[in-house]
Length: 365
Ligand SMILES: Cc1cc2nc3c(=O)[nH]c(=O)nc-3n(C[C@H](O)[C@H](O)[C@H](O)COP(=O)(O)OP(=O)(O)OC[C@H]3O[C@@H](n4cnc5c(N)ncnc54)[C@H](O)[C@@H]3O)c2cc1C
Ligand SMILES: NC(=O)c1ccc[n+]([C@@H]2O[C@H](COP(=O)([O-])OP(=O)(O)OC[C@H]3O[C@@H](n4cnc5c(N)ncnc54)[C@H](OP(=O)(O)O)[C@@H]3O)[C@@H](O)[C@H]2O)c1
Image 1 (tube, rainbow, N blue to C red):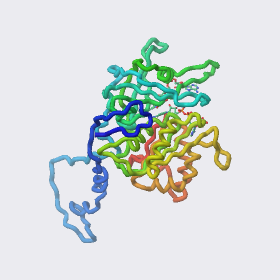
Image 2: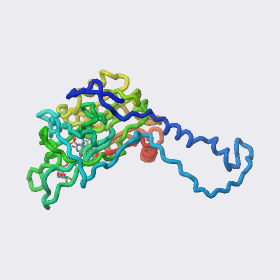
Image 3: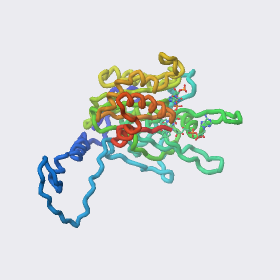
């Protein structure tokens, strides 16, 4: 049983039923067992504790069973592709609000769609949206993916809605014409009551860690904030029998102007509720610079906390998640290279290990 408490956007708030489960430490145990060196001495190993151990022949006709990989992320009950383009789910738009200021470069909208609980998503997943209408070849439009911006409970706390955070794409092409992105404009123009054709849920890369005491470092540019809003609502605005966050959640968010900050009031409320467990740092690229006068990108802000971040990255239960513009990945790698080099560590190799351990998770586009 989970309950939405203190929702920052109290559109409605009700008690809800939510699949409960026990907090799983099995992956932790499995890791320990997997590396249990004593185990080497119990079988055919010739040397044990410095003495020669008896070697016993083993004859078996059974194929050795491969231990199932146990994920450190919350994969339990995760549903993938319940709805596909051939059998999509049609929900209704319940709410659609512009959340950036009028003077912001570009518009970002927060929208809530009804699902009646039929799209059972987890924090960190995405949905597909098939915009109404046809393309230039007379075919139905292809789906576009959007990261889910609400926790599994949804903004209304009843597990019956899904929310998105969508930037309206408008650009000038080489011929000087203004082009509007098909799906983002369809979504940003949706009125309450309109139908929305959806697929999914999809994605496992951005699922949250199981460990409630983990350090979770979230790196977002623009609408890349979506999965982190979802994480943070679960951590700080909801009560779950099987998950009580008591680690450190540290959010870095990069946007062009202060009027383009996304959900700052919600994050302020979280900080007020859990000052020991939540940190938030903004990088406002067109208003701020560092001491050298460089544009304040997310990696520029992170560099101010270089030592601290590097120390956190050495811990087994630190998880980094990155979401948003593709360009941010290279910028973040660049600062990590110099941090790791101070300890004589090759960052790319270290990152490979972190990825393998599911501690470095990237979804950029
Ligand atoms: C996993 C995933 C999650 C995503 N989550 C989100 C999200 O939460 N929120 C969000 O807003 N978006 C998200 N996106 C992006 C989203 O899927 C769409 O790509 C985006 O909304 C644009 O779609 P559109 O239909 O409006 O544009 P389209 O009509 O598909 O046009 C996009 C095309 O326009 C062209 N184009 C774009 N900009 C320019 C330019 N400046 N100059 C010239 N050509 C250009 C490119 O060819 C581009 O492919 C996500 C993408 C992925 C893969
Ligand atoms: N799951 C996913 O894959 C996923 C989810 C959500 C969104 N997205 C994608 O994320 C992108 C978000 O764009 P947006 O329009 O919402 O963002 P935005 O409002 O334009 O903000 C992006 C911020 O990042 C800065 N930036 C630009 N280049 C950068 C770089 N190389 N390194 C670091 N920061 C950089 C921008 O600075 P300046 O503009 O001042 O240069 C700006 O401050 C979209 O392309 C969207 O498709 C992907």
